[in-house]
Image (cartoon, rainbow, N blue to C red; front, side, top):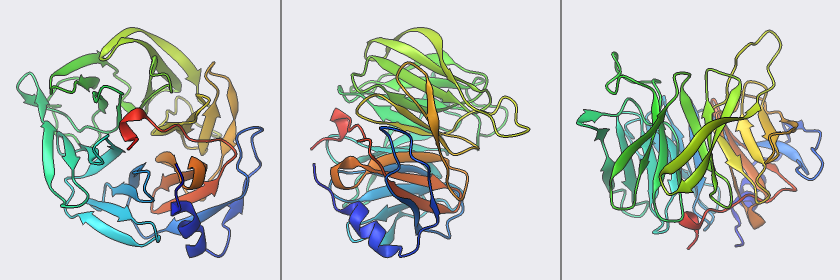
Length: 306
């Protein structure tokens, strides 16, 4: 699917911020560029396949759209602190609302629909990130960041909302389950805790049914850092994972082998592929949105195909 978003973005920025040493077979193939800035805390980048990119400013309490021409506009204000986002098969934005809900947003009308607002009669803590499977089910994490205390759910956990609307708690992770994504074949679910270096994986036995927890990989640590975890992540067509961390975007192959790191001027929170041929990595990093051309091709989930 051809997209022109990255071209427009690169035209907006005429000066490179930094060059990165490429990871063989991965990239980057060019320089990191700043697309937009002056946010408070950017998160949850998601592309619609038509040249639009959506992102959350969690602290700014807004949901933004960057259109095919690179123009920035506010989609929701307030956004109830949206965080992770992904487009579903209907072209709607499914989002984690840190004020306690999983929501769907129509980009055309700005209508917000609640998909789930709690489990067993109690509101979620603060939904953080999500991924949509080919059946329309949503895996999402619910740690403690921005949650009221004591925690409404009493635990930090991750859940599955099936296409019919039933919510199931899949597991608990004390060290803050944050980023979540599926492998391209949807046979593995990855969970990225923020308070431990060990990143986790689960075999998907059926939609919403998982095998035992395993350690997928261990993140490299910044100097003087111990036990530092990840935040968000994305995946390419070969199943390589791109995990945001204090060091930058750390890349691991499907076997959990560390391939290298892509550095940015600010600490990355989340990332996604978009642009022409899905070969541009967009990174939300603190106050800014960055873009860098890649050799790798980002995976497009069936839920996001139109």
